Length: 115
Image (cartoon, rainbow, N blue to C red; front, side):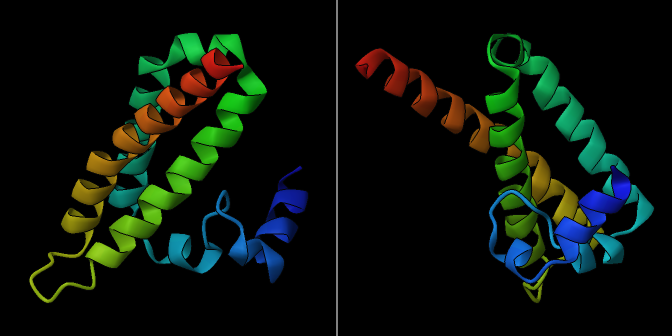
């Protein structure tokens, strides 16, 4: 399975997908930033356990998209001249991932009610 995931992530089309983190960007992160991303992700998953239990496949797909978008936003924030590298990355990621996930869950619930 790891080989398949790695092959998908290095595919040229994969870089255009919203739910895949750029492998080069991930390789440039410090161990502290990766650890912080894991902690934030675990907290968001725990916070939304009911949604995970309700429809796990959809939740993981949505979470992957939110995680990738939060990482892209955080990476862009590090380019600011006043940014402090990993600290800016972690802060921006931690601020955006819960917001993006909550927004996606609310949109999904609204869509289900509209049916």
